[in-house]
Image (cartoon, rainbow, N blue to C red; front, side, top):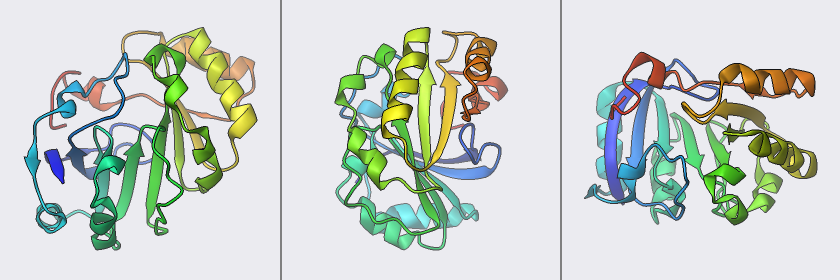
Length: 209
């Protein structure tokens, strides 16, 4: 498994925002989103076994883990690592283009499926059949950069949504926060608005936080 970085911080977004979390960021991604904020994860890193990764996680002393990238589901031994983390709360961040039907997650593990909107320039690669396999505890994330993104996201929700917690967040520094909130309230959408609070607490370009 190719690991880009492992670090302890607080979760900056999603339904675990604010909680101490161990981040395992894998190297490699099959997408090249226009607004990607982790382009450094496309390459580099070091080869590690699932056992090596587990030992590093264990040393931090917390039971909450975020598996991210890049695209972590491209790692061949990802299920081996997840099996080792059965006693941990684990969030697996996936980019919406990888088939999740073969991943049988435990009740303490959940997906955050980041559905790429038109401004990402990768929306056509979304595997929207993944909606069929999401559970109530899984998160469906839309990162909004324009009104086109917002309207596109609404159509996807109307057509494909079955289960899960929907979150809308702004592309950092590209759109006003209140603009998205106004759209949500005007349309009476029952979605969760969120910010990337780690970019407020630290420099937006700082790594390892």
